[in-house]
Length: 332
Image (cartoon, rainbow, N blue to C red):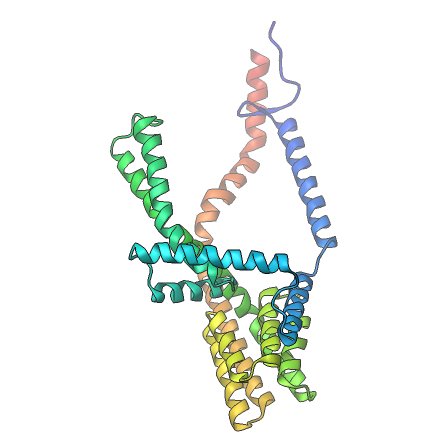
């Protein structure tokens, strides 16, 4: 007994069933988008709270809140010293490497300097571990027996990924964080100009801007909040601005820091200098947007060929294909 499909088919698939599944997926996506838009949380609330607690501890001279926390911190430092001594005894750890890794961690948003030693040790251990795993899988268990030259290439790829993986992860995260800070810097400078013209001090202006920009640009708001805290308790205010330039790998931020240091040193008007910088950064952002728009036709060629044209052909030729399939089904 030959059964015929209940609805039109295309390439052996029931069109009504596929359409129903796609409609359900689209409805779920719409509901998820609505839920995400309604339940917006402030990403800066927890960060600002933690930074304010740290400022209070530094002002009061309190390093830890309890003996248990103090013991955990000491234990963590002991572990870091053991790892550092082990790497130093193996002649694979230098202070320049630690400083460079601390710099990359700061660019990526990690301020714990102890992670630098662990990352250097991980870069030493991870290639060996991945190499052993790859050797066991490819040569002992032979999960791919038909691979000949590909085995050597796979082993090399695993070792390279183990050595460069942590550094590539940090570089990727630092690049994304730098782009987000670059986008919000002109708006932050405009708010700084308004705060300066309103008569606020520099640390109060940074704190106010951090609160205002915390929801739109949490990374920049976090940096400004930390700078405001450092301005309030460091002996040299210049050190706070230099720390901001150290934590952000962006020439625009270095220009802002230079301007702030000069205004602190020579007493030049802060609002006018920041207004000029804000105009320059906005022009730079507009030029970058125009450059991306000019590259758009060439970039859209590949998606047009791979995704848009096949869909267009399906929409145009789909009804005819369904009619032909139904005609052949009726003949059978």
